[in-house]
Length: 370
Image (cartoon, rainbow, N blue to C red; front, side, top):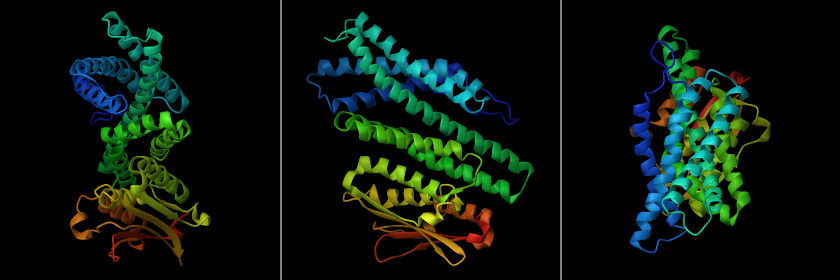
């Protein structure tokens, strides 16, 4: 898939060798083919061992025709498009992903019919169905890869700036970029995308409108990162929308196991807070309170004004945790550093110990928020 903003130490761009990209593509697409076969088999159970091997071969042909084609065609074009800005970059990039998503299934379907593996359906019936899936997956993985590689480049560029300019503002930008990268990377790993695709595929047959809503939420998650590349702070309303989209996507996966409430006055929507600050706390609750427990749990997000301070709090009803052993290398440690870089000693972060669960709260000075 595409690799943007990949730089040498001197700041010039370079493109990964084709042999290395193809080797990685073969490995990744083989695993993707296996995963898709298992995923689709949940909806269409296999009958015999012979059908199992046939279906395995079919999915490998589709994933390699599309995925390997993307590596050969998209990656070098994407590097050159990275020099452009706005629609001049996005329009040809999205068009290229759609073209690959259409061409790959066409090549794979042709191969299957050439070897008599096309089944009872016509060429067009096979191709039209696989093309829809191919375009969907190509766009999602292409957007996810673009976002991760872009954020990697931002982190590298900011690190180079800090070598020559030891200013607190630059340090805040670096920490914000790292927070976005870590947060999005954890959600754009293959298992997250697989879970999301699985949920969307299930909804396509049962509730197409809900499936479209989930795709829009996923798109907003990616767009949020791109729209806030340079800003260490965002509006509270934007941060809450990010959190809501993330939790709604996860609720599609966890169902009734995930319950959440958001309590924030509308008049505070324009107040600026560190980007991904609430999201970091919500992901922490998902990791410790919801995902490991069969019964799931509840997450509460509360934001209010106390005098000259803004207080934001995320609590859950999970098993709880102690802050001391988790701070080193933990998302809370990065958030604490960002608060210090942006607001100095005027901001603070606290880990509470309610009767049940965990509660993490941070406080920001209202005077510093313009």
